[in-house]
Image (cartoon, rainbow over all chains, first blue to last red; front, side, top):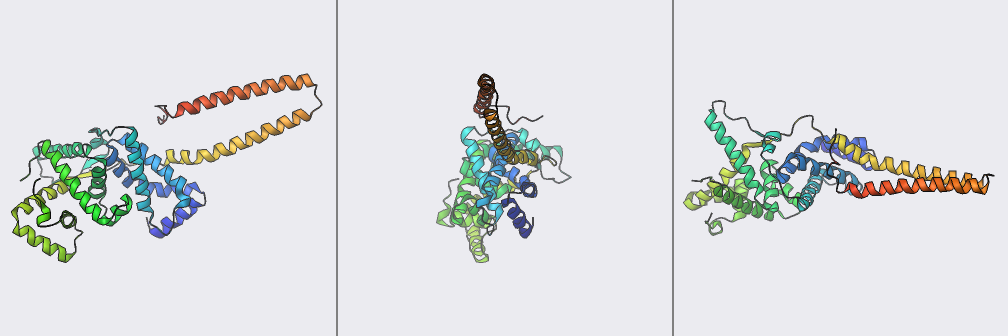
Length: 188
Length: 144
């Protein structure tokens, strides 16, 4: 969404007109769902967290400074919502999420059934590995590897310095490598 | 992973290099250290392999599965409730005032008042019980 258009929509939302919130929700629900799914591990909990985050965004919109960028602010609310939800319920990474919300990127059409099975197994191992990580490690990997944010954006969403983003990513990747090794993945 | 990257390249610099966030000068320096250290290359290969595994994974929430309808009802309901409740309170207050000022016999006023107050107390009790149960209702988010 164009920044000027987004700012104009948010200005109208701040005036209390909820119908201008719809394009905002539609623009952010897909990246929001990806982040929530990566944090919560299953589509039901992810959808609940996403809805609650949008409602909180609406309720706090009057305090939002229109000179700032909306995306980091919203993703910060979503991240906090996911963490709040995980305090009251255990994280449940189910493999159904892989079929409902996750897809394999199209592979080489020449890949045989064996290669496809290998990729599927690797995906499942990665998914289960994510479940076993701490919330700090999981959220930074989701923001970086699944949503593809740059360090500056991650720093704004997590409210930490950019140097800490790099350091936390190192520890998160190392923890994930340890989990994957424990699950039988071998590295050269 | 027992290699101590800090002896050659800091953790942060290695991550910036991996994620394409390093400056050209930093890239050249790290590239040189990678060429000089097989242990560092091995460690870097592990991180790169994990990154590639993630690339293979793409989240694709289903089309047409928007959360907007549920959000709309949640953000408009409070406005509706506020208007409805304040209107109802005003309406009841006006009714009581009009009835109290009417020339009806005192017995009629007392009995009618008792019926109305009784019904309102029961209604308030039901609303309060429902409100208290709402927080623990496992089916509150179930939609037809």
